[in-house]
Image (tube, rainbow, N blue to C red):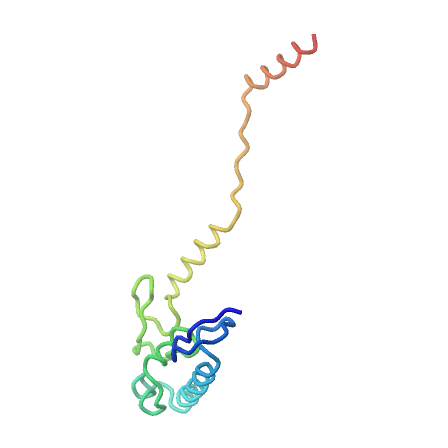
Length: 137
């Protein structure tokens, strides 16, 4: 049993893959439901408007954006920056170009590299043949 402290309230809890305790996780889910419902009824609302109307902290709303649980539809309201290049993004951690580049790099890193066979020169073939003939005599 792995005991950890909750990232939000500080209570000790049995770790099961989440960084928060079950109480804080259920509170977070209810806050997310409020935000999602508000955005469904008021598309295009700013982070501060959503925070004021739902009484959910802006920090939580920005975390939902980072986790790609919600996204900004309008391209002029970019609250997040790409963690790699700093470009404005609508949700997540990376812009499309950085995500594509990292995917390409990861794919290249995990593909097995085949070594080209070393071509034997005619001299080495002759030496081996001669050495074998000398042994036979």
